[in-house]
Image 1 (cartoon, rainbow, N blue to C red):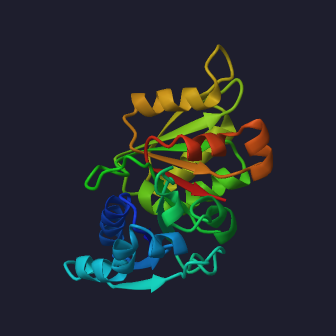
Image 2: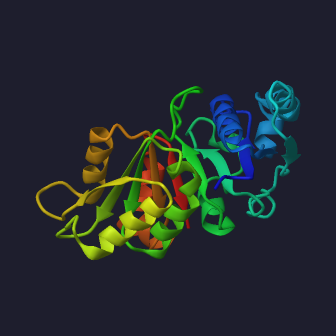
Length: 260
């Protein structure tokens, strides 16, 4: 099992190089075609970053010429706002970044959140401080709560999970019991794919909330990637009342694969 088509979003920000290098690494691992999509806005093309924005395609093609990957570069256009206009539907994985307050205006506002919600394609969201060459996918934590979204995320991330050295199934559920038959079914399903998962989770007790418990598990397992379902409740509900998806997207400290 592998990814065949990977889309990486390109812009004139300082986040672009590390994002592209990570996408190249993933494409090489999976022998995938890499599609670079220029998502520059009108502000990028007319502002102080205009020369960098106008050279995105050339820089992409020059870098990819140093690899053996099948690749192409497309331009979404400065007004692109939908998953279709951002070439999101015909991909197995999309690589993007968490928006940085200083450069968010350089890239389409629909990335990452709106595309994640509308494309039906898993998205790898890199933190703003991400550096090229850092390890990704060696130790993976899967956030699991028996929802449609977490089920989708688990299966969408299977090409990464099967390559990982360590996988932790972090179960969100009050009174967690690692011997619960439903939990064991998930672990057994992963095992049938060649993935040996360690079971951990949030037991709903004490002062630590679910996300804090998950990050504690990340540290214990030395995880470098989170896999999670996105927006089991509506985005507006999560924005108003809080939710795991909003917390993860707004406070990314490590790479995050999300599916909706």
